[in-house]
Image 1 (cartoon, rainbow, N blue to C red):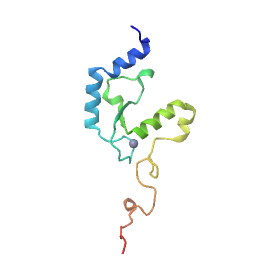
Image 2 (image 1 turned 90 degrees about the vertical axis):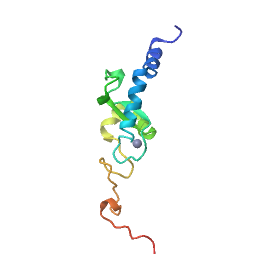
Image 3 (image 1 turned 120 degrees about the horizontal axis):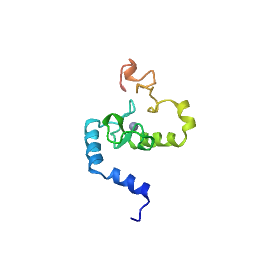
Image 4 (image 1 turned 180 degrees about the vertical axis):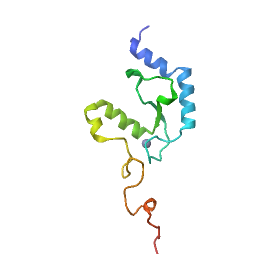
Length: 117
Ligand SMILES: [Zn+2]
């Protein structure tokens, strides 16, 4: 085989029937990005504990769905582990960690929409 062992192993997992079946079922059951308040559909299924660090590759409890933006944000953190602790959980810009809007005049915070006259 001409592939390096590592590349071939990675590709084999991501193209395996077991992973593709689990991934599709996970996205059907968890269609939205897992970051609180993010309205974007998930299109990436991520291992919470990565396979490289010994995470179970086919355990649904080790999976989370991300939109492309938040998956990139998580990946960027993995490249800078020294900053990970100081920036807290992933969150949507303008929202708190639970996904609630920070703006006091947002309708979710009790303001009433009066519209334009
Ligand atoms: Zn998202």
